[in-house]
Length: 386
Ligand code: NAD
Ligand code: MG
Image 1 (spheres, helix red, strand yellow):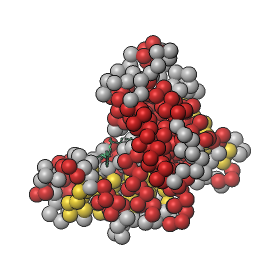
Image 2: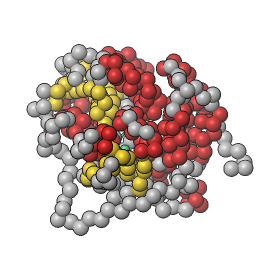
Image 3: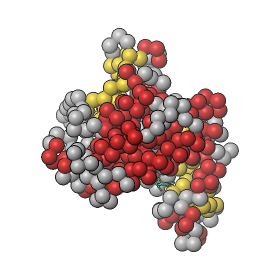
């Protein structure tokens, strides 16, 4: 029995993780779950899984939360420190990091410090603090198992050869809801348009990141750290069907890909049961239907976020923390009707260029830069010339 903690259990990845736990209840058990504000949903989850602990991280809700709605055997806790405590608890084997944004860093850090196996969904952790957290993992023996579908695909395909035989990896991107749109159309793209993802059903932040291709940009950085690759070994291809989740090309030219319907339960399950495979709740390919698989290069002019990702992956240092924070704020301003769609990468570019580059920042430096970039992006306006 593997003992699992799910940080961010009420989100898209969190609820899919619980579906996997429910389907594989003879192998996986829930020790603890956390939610930021949706405590009613968290309470319902405790009624189904009876975990030892449930955490509501937004402490301001303490007066409102009805403790009686939680399972009688579940201890209810509040605040960010309770996330840290759960992530490092002795009775936890695997921590699924399904909190969105840089807010997920603290819990992931605690889990790595405690030497846990990490089912890594919160890619922002690697964007903000890739080198520091990878160093920490080496010291504590903590292992990252990717939950992100592309990185899970690469992890699976890589098991067919030796690391030294990997020539390059090709990350697939659906292209998002705006694939094929013109510059003029993009200028008037609304949050509703951007939230209408053609193939994946995800939380709002990553859905907007998919529309700008910032998600793929972040995944380039994520892949660099997860697989210890040179940035020149990472490529991106648009594959609108989202069936091929990524490809590894080996030195002899053989390309190995992983295919499955676009559903996160499979990569989540693989991270939770690796190195074994079991029948589970993920939908399966129907090979009696006619399928076609298309691949095309991304439009880097219309979607400049992608190049930002490659640049940040190359420069490293403080760039990831600044890009991530600027993007989080720009996405939230776009969702609030305060920025236009194409201003998201524009704001990120300008904040990135304006920051004081630090090639070797500490965690404290990164926290300070994250805060700086958030403040700058909150008051950013596009200059009339652009
Ligand atoms: P979501 O918005 O659906 O859920 C976010 C979860 O984080 C919720 O449980 C929420 O309570 C919690 N949360 C939000 N703010 C918090 C805060 N300040 N402190 C503590 N907890 C907080 O997000 P999601 O789509 O499930 O994405 C989660 C992570 O997984 C992201 O890092 C995303 O990039 C990654 N990811 C998601 C998908 C997907 O299919 N949704 C795929 C690959 C990777
Ligand atoms: Mg992905």
